[in-house]
Image (cartoon, rainbow, N blue to C red; front, side, top):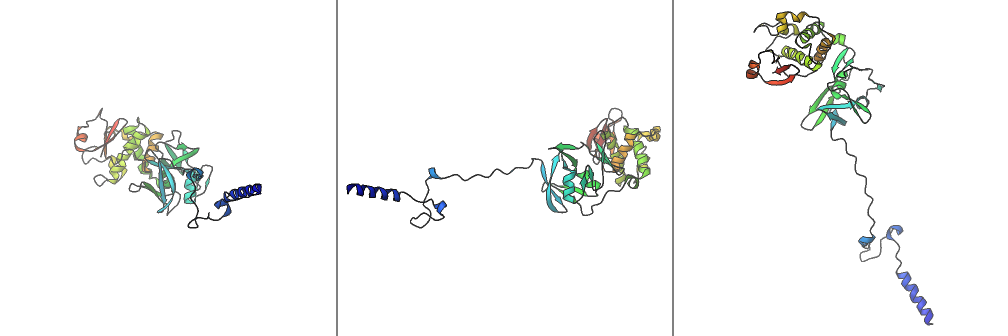
Length: 296
C-alpha cells in the first residue's frame, strides 16, 4: 500500500510539471488574465535580425526624369554620370552593344570628346569605370537626345527633361561653316600650342562675346572688332589667316556644342608677354589655363 501511494504521488508531480509550449499548442498559457505567462529572460530566444540594408554609394544622387523620381546617378568630380544601359532603361531607349537609341558615339583617342553624327561632345575627364560598367557624363547622354540636364542644389538631385526625346541634329546641319572657319582660326592663332582645354577656353571667350550685348553678335565681327582698337593680335599680324590644324577645328566644334572651360570670361591674356595690369585692376579673374589667364 505504501508503495502504491509513492507511485501515485510521483505521477502527480510529473503531470503537474508538464506544461505544453504555448507557441506549439497555439493557445495561451493559463494565468491570471488568460494571457501568456512571462518567460524568463534566460529562456527567451532572440529574434532573428534582418540583414542591414545595403547603402548606396556615397556619391549617389537622386535622378528625376520629367519631374518624377526614377533612380540614381553618380556624382564624380562635380559631374553626374551613369551607364548607357541605365539611361536607356530610364528613358525607354534601346541599347545594344554600344549603340543607344540608334546612335553610336565614337570616343577620341584622348578620351576627352565623343563624336556623334558629326557632332563633337566634350567628355572632359573622360568616361569612368565602376563595378564593371562604363559611365558617361549624364549631360552628354542628354545632349545626344536633346534632353536638358540640370542640378537642383536645394535637394541635391539631378533633373532630366526628356519630354521631347529625339536624336540630336547632325553636324552638317548644326554647325555654321563660317563660324567654324573663323573660330578655328582665332583658336589656332591664339592658342595652337596649348592643350585642348586651353584652346577651348579661348573659343569660350569668343562665343561669350558673341552672346554679350557689349560686343558684336557674330564670330567674325567679334574677331575683327576695332571699336576700342584691335582686340586680338593675330588680326594685326595676319596670323588669323593661317590654316588651323585638326585640333583647332575640333576645339571650335566642341565650343559650338557647349564645351566650357573658361566660364563667363570675356578676356584672356598671356601674362608673360602681355600687359595684364588692366585686367587685374578692372576685371574679375576666372581661371588660368595653360599660358593664359582668363577674366570676366
